[in-house]
Length: 267
Ligand SMILES: Nc1ncnc2c1ncn2[C@@H]1O[C@H](COP(=O)(O)OP(=O)(O)OP(=O)(O)O)[C@@H](O)[C@H]1O
Image 1 (tube, rainbow, N blue to C red):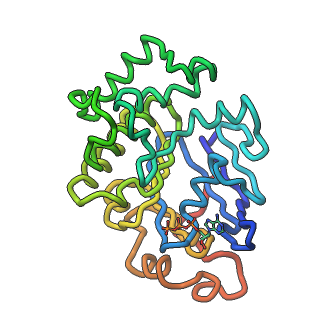
Image 2 (image 1 turned 120 degrees about the vertical axis):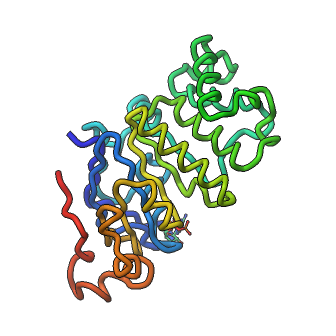
């Protein structure tokens, strides 16, 4: 069984803007997938629909065999804690310590009153410290999050995501705010930890070179439609041009389904 199976995913925003149209793909356990496409293509909408931060309009998202669309209460909480999110703007609580930010990754496993009071278990604190050492930030443990550089803050974001013990990490342009050196550190850390822990990752990226370097599979989106799904080797210059410059229905298959993909989906 695939870790995630997305079928016919469609999102139309309240103002009528079509964010996604007929998206189908599967994610296998441990796969590292980059999602690329021009600004406004629907990359963020896709990731946010997968964990229901954005409510999909139509379609199906099966995560570990459970339908995510329509899930509520405990079921939604369980789905979300096994699907961590990493954000472009880090989304740390700036005024609290680095350690506490990592511990926030454990909130989905705690009762809401314990979480509100910050009553973390000793084992969670030990694990958060271990994760901070893993991302090379043990010396920053007690600093306020906003005292760290952007690259360091994103490594806290990675440690927080790992604290959730997820099966899937959704990373929405994790390096868009970082300089080249910090971008490399963040991408190599994210890739290494996912690989070591068998975590799948869907990573939105603007940088095609980074997608080719780190992902085993690349999904290309143009105007809300999937126009490419293949390996880095299959992502030719022609395909890159297609993803970034031409609407599939205009350029590849007039009056037909979204452009053919370099690889057929496996169920
Ligand atoms: N809340 C919203 N209401 C209406 N339209 C929206 C909303 N959020 C996004 N959109 C639109 O949906 C489309 C897809 O946007 P999305 O942010 O998913 O693209 P993206 O590929 O992530 O872009 P970028 O790379 O610039 O972040 C765009 O046309 C965008 O303007």
